Amino acid sequence: MPNITLKQLRYFEALARHRHFGRAAAASSISQPALSVQIRDLEEELGAALFERGARQVRLTVPGEEVARRVRAILGAVSELSDIVRSGGERLTGRLRLGVIPTIGPYLLPRAIAALTTAHPGIDFHIRETLTERLIGEMLDGRLDTAIVALPVSERSLTEVVLFDERFVLVRPAADAGRPVPDADALREMRLCCWRRGIAFAIRRCRFATCAPPPRARRSTRARFPRWCRWWGPVSASR
Image (cartoon, rainbow, N blue to C red):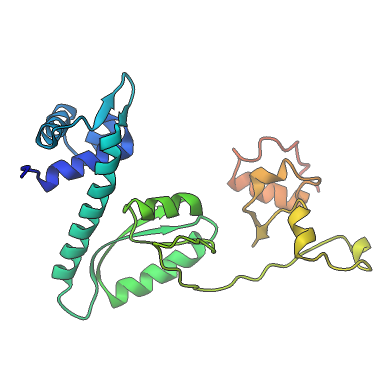
């Protein structure tokens, strides 16, 4: 039976995720030579090469891909076991790796985390903010415990729970007032910009739209997101 340690599995998972010895070593808080030794020992114990070493990055071999899937499951089970042992009561304790999409994170997380911290002070929150697709992938890889995403997800291995529905309002020119409201199929074909509380969450899409945001919104958004707004022309301060 191979003599494999949890430390080796954690270092393997870090290297499989970062695909670079230097970045994996930094994420694991050890030196790169020490990480290389642990990976080499693991490969010797399993009797197979798990990585293809390149000049700038490493890649998982075919056996390495299979080992990576098993290692993520093992580490996830170990983490759950530690949380169960630490809880030992009615209050929740331990690490909670929570993912959230950027469009609702700033509005939902402050109140939610404050309430959870008050009710369960033993929770150690680790927040990851990115797009739904990446959050789902990281959950499937065992890097996140749960995530707040845009539904539907349609992954059989995950459980979906609806938290709330958000209402959208279509604003259109007054000249269109006499025309019928577009149905769902028509809206899918339209180029729309999504706005909320004066902040554009689809700024980068606006450059492909048939119209630009109004001057006042442009000035406000330029101040907050200057890098995204380089494509806009100068906006007069008097407008």
